[in-house]
Length: 298
Image 1: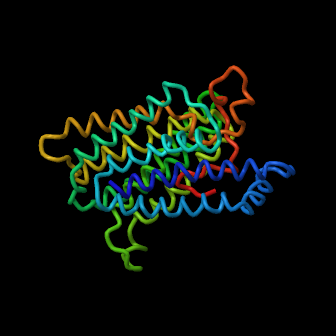
Image 2: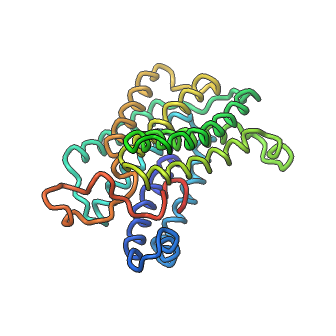
């Protein structure tokens, strides 16, 4: 659980650092590619990339040690980290409701930490491994279809697809039990992990660029938490401590609900609150970074 929370801190902090770097590199024009190149010259952006890499390693360590449902809820809490760090470094004003959502996330994670057992001991079947590979392919198809939807539904569809892709990564990590070159190359879960992660990155990038950050992030949180948690419990044997199943279910629901309430922090804000008079924060679609940093790097 410490690794899962550490990953959330890394991802959430990286988002803000990369947003600050992108803001500093924002002048000069040239489009997203030029902005990315200028941002890469900023130490904060490079620090954010390093934190993303460390967060991914911590995520893998957590997935090999505790149930998927606990890791998924902890990773969703990176939105709370982003909100708190943005309030400090970017001077974003959080409303009382948003501070309450941060408290909800903390309370839910505390309940999960107390109730979570060890990871399930069931080996993943070959059928499940191929099912994850099929899901990764379906995520790509969902992206192709979702991009044609009207603007209102596009962000939600693409966000959900990105969440499903990240969920495939979470499950696939558990299905890779031998890191030898031969077994690794013949394991369908290896390709599910690569394809699911790549598809999730593409869909989330498209969702953040072409729709509401809040809607896309909310869809992503739902997609990456509920499905993988169910797979872990039903097919991989994830369990809670004796007599604490109710606390795990409640903690999971509370943590995810709190994260959804903070969905506007799926991408850190561009303008300080003074730029939006009369509003206690930023607009619904405030992102600036060249692409999503959470779990993806750039």
